[in-house]
Structures are given as C-alpha cells and as structure tokens.
Image 1 (spheres, rainbow, N blue to C red):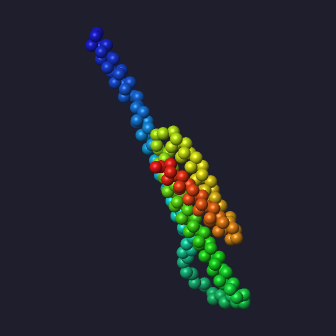
Image 2 (image 1 turned 90 degrees about the horizontal axis):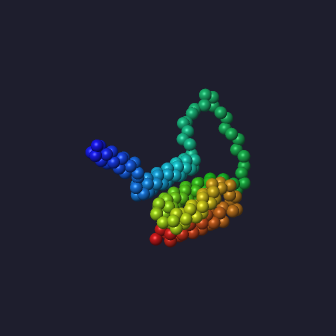
Image 3 (image 1 turned 135 degrees about the horizontal axis):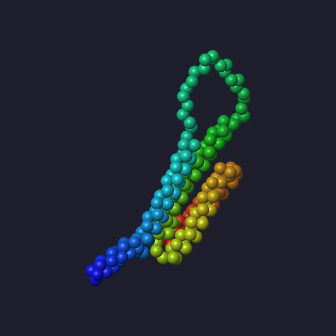
Length: 177
C-alpha cells in the first residue's frame, strides 16, 4: 500500500512538472513568434520592392508582324524641346520608383531593428519599440503617397521623408545602445 502511494505521488509530480512550462520556455516561444512575424513582414516588403521594380521595367513584348502593311502614321510637328520634356517625365517616373524602392529597403531594415528592440525583456525597450513603430507606420503611409505627389512638391516630399527616416534611425540607434 505504501509503495502504491509513493508511486502515485511520484507519477503526479512527474506529470505536473512536465505539463508546466518555465518562464524561460514561454519567453523563448514568444521571441521565436516575434522573429517569425518580423521575417514575414520582411518577406512581404521584399515582395513589394520586387513588384515596384518590375513595374519600373518595361514589359517584354513579343514582336508581331502585321498581316497587312499599315500606313505610316503622319508626323506632326512638335515644339522644340517637347521630346526632351517627355524623356524627363520618363526619367522622373523612374527616379520616383527607384527612390521608393530604396526607401522600402530602409523600411525593412528599420522593421528588423525595431523587432530586435521589441524582443528585449525590459518594459522600457518594449515601450520605445511601440513608439518607434508608430513613427515607422507614419513614414510607410507617406511612402505610399509618393505617387500622388506633384512634380512641384516632389523635392520637398523627398526631403521630409528622408528627414523622417534619418530621425527614426537615429532614435533606433540610441535605443539599441
């Protein structure tokens, strides 16, 4: 009887201790989950960057030969410099797309660093990470509005966004020290 009692107590202790996870295991699981989420966000941003870059490249077309010859389009006289203005428009669009891709890459780096800060155990780091994530989200919204910017306001927009990124990165550097 005594042996049965001791076996029952030992079994219940074994089952109880194996069912309870330590705080360390829970923290590790939480950190692993945060890392997975950060990687997912990073992959999404990389896909966005790839999409932006492919949007910039002209679509490959297969040459087709018309069944019947088409008459040449009549040429219309253009004002001097008109072709140059059209080329500048293409260049401006290309510059905007490359600037946006560059900023998306910076955004991905900022995300990774915020996630690193957020994974720390102290509450101050978590609070700072939350505040910096809000700033990051505002910059991302501005970046999404890049196409809506008029040519006249483009340089100011670029300056404001670059300043915002510089400030955010400086604050991250200070917080991660």
